[in-house]
Length: 252
Image 1 (cartoon, rainbow, N blue to C red):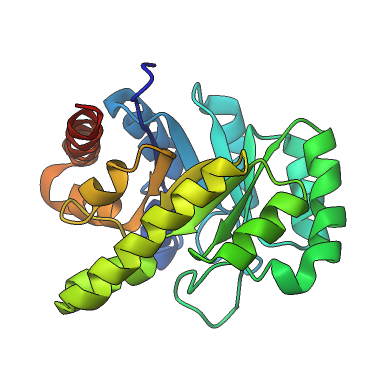
Image 2: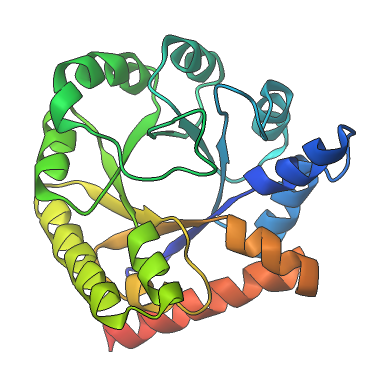
């Protein structure tokens, strides 16, 4: 991978959402993960929620067995999830906030207020060889706290930026994009690896992909939705193409 390359992690949660709507075995998230891998994904992301609303324990078992690329295991900071992660020892774990009533992750993790608890929570995961990522808003206080507790990676929440774009609120969109840019640079200056994700589409991905400090984008819902119209392989390939164009343009 070249110095300017940007990794794409494909989240396959919502293949499981469609499967679970009928209660059967189809469509298979593991098949989707392998297709994404073949289409150019550098990793696969799956969020095992406490209520198992989409990804199941059996899906995680299957992904660990089937994947040739790394698995990014998204999880809440609970004892149950810690035990599951320690059993599987995936390449990476991303600690995310989780509320039962939310449709999707609504914001970044509150690290500063729970610094001591989270430091003790992630220590065994790091000792087991997992790269620990913290999903947070573009907020200096949260980034500093993530650094202090020993996280190696932060993932910046791009949801507000994407929502403002979809609503046509361009001033708010551009302000959020600038905050993401500044905080990516700040986190990098602390020695943290910077990832980003949530809500990214073909229309919104390139400005974020152009940030030189960002090493990975995690994208799921949009790609699974786009796969309905064009197929998963071309959907992933188009995202990969747009990301590469943005990174190459930023490097010139």
